[in-house]
Image (cartoon, rainbow, N blue to C red; front, side, top):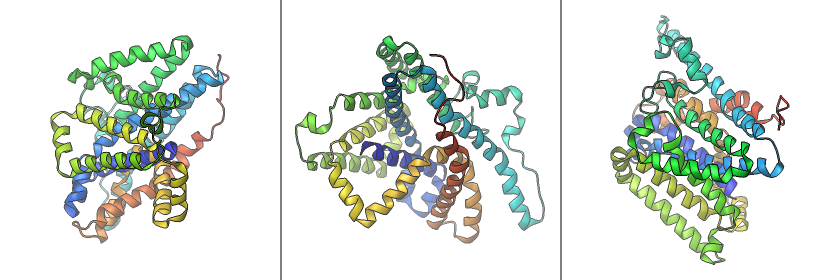
Length: 378
């Protein structure tokens, strides 16, 4: 049940980040939804937590099977880089496509001059390898990758997380010790505000660590039923509902936005902590009850299928939404008033449909690879 929850949460986090990038039309049509979209950047800590849980599970599977650490890194490389490179092509070609469509109406084609056109070979080498932040440190997404696609900075951090697990797997006997030392260094670094702008993973590690901790807790069977010594799902459901309701209330009253503005990194960590608490509580729910509701209640079953699909394509959506949304937005704006909620909704729906095509062409083929193309040494 937790796996399905994580998949749904991954999709919702991607949608939340998406809403952040189109927050203005959402705010114009619905101030309530606009308040939620305004803090959509907090979907990133949710991704870090889910990644920590899933990558730790993958690393433990690698250890249990006795596979070489290079296999782990190979799968992680396929997960991140090929779709990322494909998304670069989309981002590069999109301005020219938008101008071509616009010229059908105006009769004049004016070649666009996006910011990335001034980048040289060295710049592109750094972007393609996700190492640019090391050479040009600054606020994440603001100056480093924003000329191309601002969300790319998180991929650089994410792959560094994978590299740490890879290094720990290489030293099998010291796996836990390496993670412990990295965790101590990460927590210490997170207390230094300037460290977040150096392009290194350490200050973001505590959020990833929360996902690792969730994995370890569940491996040792410390679920809510065992901790609280209750068999009923009701107290767990009630506590989870209270946490979720409190979080939404804090968003709608502007307190989350205020904390994010004054202490952004603390806010990120608290959101990650709340997510871990909710994910842990989900493991205490009775799966048979949830499955029965899912099978018999249509207004639960069909939205859940949509959310699971959204979770499946969440990485692709995260990669391309920040630029791709301009295409459906162009068409929606031509038929829908600017203050209508239909404008952001149609924009989101159109972007999701286009993302499904991107997923099928550029992400799914790499997920189907069953074995490394090279015989890596043990």
